[in-house]
Image (cartoon, rainbow, N blue to C red; front, side):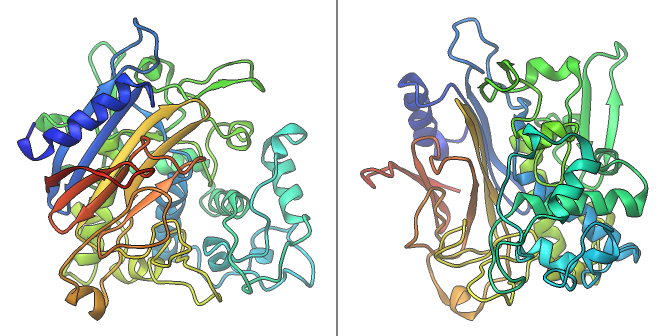
Length: 413
């Protein structure tokens, strides 16, 4: 491990000893590759629990929206099978009514369709047919395009639309982006990004795994999320989100599992696509047109919204804080009773003000204030990040306690 990250390493180890959480995997990197990846602790607090490793799989929760759903939609748009201006009513027959007839696929992606944020459909609905009808006939919470309310429901519908267009189950569409290898024993499997072969296990790096419904032989590699009273068991290797579970473990809003290296590989994929000088991304840098990706990360025109298409952008009210840039990412995963927390880099080309700003910062916990280019997005059912706050400052990674704002480390990136 580089001495640049030694103090960050010690902070995480102290947090594990104090039982802030049992396990962490972390990757810090830039567009050209990882700078630091490490694993800490054990998968549970039990003394005989499996040690955390760089190839430990975590439930990625809402990262599913940008890694899986948005990626598949970009491919469909480039193929001409879908258009952002397509009306939902033309794709889903149950979506009917004067209040929603003009809602488009772009509105679903921007969380501006009028749909409410969440409902526990799993309690009394089963499978796609019942979920789709319930969502499509649900009274809208607000007039479309007048607000942006983060909604799982819209992304469930997007996955249904992708299944209809491609005539392939949603999870299988995503798996088609991956290369599946099998050891001679047929027991241990690797899934590496087909579109980004750098830093793979073939080169001695950590597993860049991203997949739905991990097979049984990978369960021991999965970090548990919680003891689920609804299902009556400890969840390990099965999706935590109950609606996604009722939909078979793979949905447009949740269900994806992955390693920190897998999330990092995806972050580099996005950066390559945005920063490539070629008109279109090349095989090593994505599978979509550059103009399509640029459209997906462009901020919405919906009043007061920080959203882009599936992504989020810079606003004090957004999940990414006040500033962000395009040069670095940090990915952090950890299991904790009831929640899993992740960071992932969300890129956007800097404006003139950002380019002239000498300091690049990013805050990785709940906050509304300071920052400069360089952004971390937090996806968590709680706004707690290892009990700590990570902040990128220029070429340095600072780790702070949110409660005291005392700086514990200042590590060169």
